Amino acid sequence: MDTLIPLLLLAFVLCMLAAYVSAIISAVRIDQGVWQAAVRNKGVTVALIVFTGGFGGLYYWLRVRPELGEAPLQPVNAPGRAPTAAELRAIEASKHIGR
Image 1 (cartoon, rainbow, N blue to C red):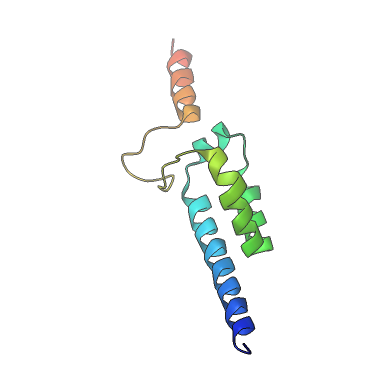
Image 2: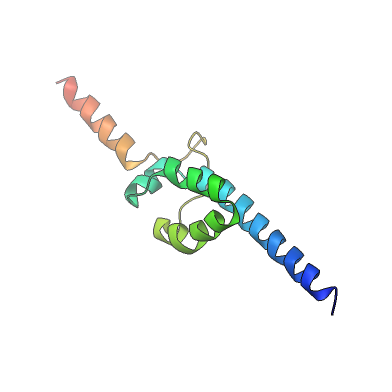
């Protein structure tokens, strides 16, 4: 019984650390266009996770990530990625400038 409380505390700390690290990795890897489509600010969310630790990680996984939907986990500069809505609008605008 004397070792149960330290083991539970260790399990809690490890779970919070896992939530923290995985939330940062996931948030950074999601494309900016997905964040804009969900009307969320990527920088603010990542800062929230970094400064609040595991609790920010839990907030990300339980509240923010479901709002982002099934977002592709790829970096913004990944080769072969689909252009974002903002990039498509910029391409269309540049076509009209030349006319």
